[in-house]
Length: 431
Image (cartoon, rainbow, N blue to C red; front, side):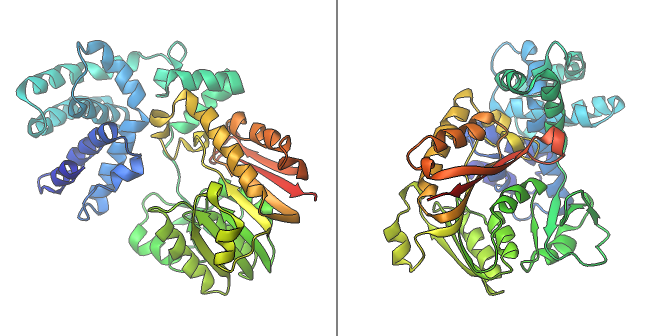
């Protein structure tokens, strides 16, 4: 990725140029969208960064429809940089009125002169002039997946799972630009003007025009607030930890659920968080430092959950059995596509079943750390039955699961709840 970083660091690179280079990097390097955005230089700040990010994510959000529109005009597969230009310009056609479309074409062709050869410039000029009409011709009824910019297999899968009407609502939800929400654990009587209440206690919408550095960041300095979606409240609410408990938080980084549980425990007790070594662990430790300053005992353990055992915990003088265990399992992320729009580019049909198999293994492993009578919560940010209730049912029929009963569950389907999708299940150890 050194060449991309070098290209982005050049002074003439504006937000549009950078967005094109990021789209090219996304499809060439097989990175997640947040990893691609991390390639932006430090001097990409303020409106320049915001515009670049909007163009990049917009190109991905509407990219399946743009690609379906321009594909019939292609004789061969274009270079990634050429397709990136088409996808960014395609998003601009969605977001700008039709009278501006000629200016979008002219701007794209002019900016592309530093990115492609003369032949490709002519090709782009010809395709971009036809692209708005081609996009407009895509019909939501006969070409549902293309119109809502999702892969065919995923739309067919959801239609079978939820029905066509609910699937249409889900697709419409996924294509919206997500709102940013913050959870404030002890809200002041008078809220800042850039926050508005939501239907969920403690959660507030953040104005899109907010100055993050000067208005939001100060709220996050301590442990009294956390940027998160209301769906995240479901799992910690089911576990319901209280003061003085020992809680094990598995697959914990960067620590959002630990934050919720610490406040439920009134910062009295212990949370042990476990996650794989990697780039998210420093953020977890930073968050824990804020919680321990208020009296909570908190420790992060870098370890694969499937390899975690009694000896590893004993070496750190930590409990080997817990009053509550939280397993926020890795999943397909189909409940958060509005927020992570690149999921629909990365996900493959086999991934859902492969996730379910891993989730079952993790749930069996997690169950071994629960005290008699203790509580175990299994959660995902997936809306797939295969990754939610089916995993729990399979677990209950295993030797480990025979010692548990399903006590309660919470399911969020975004088109019904108005926030991210999720599944959370409370299991009680009976012996």
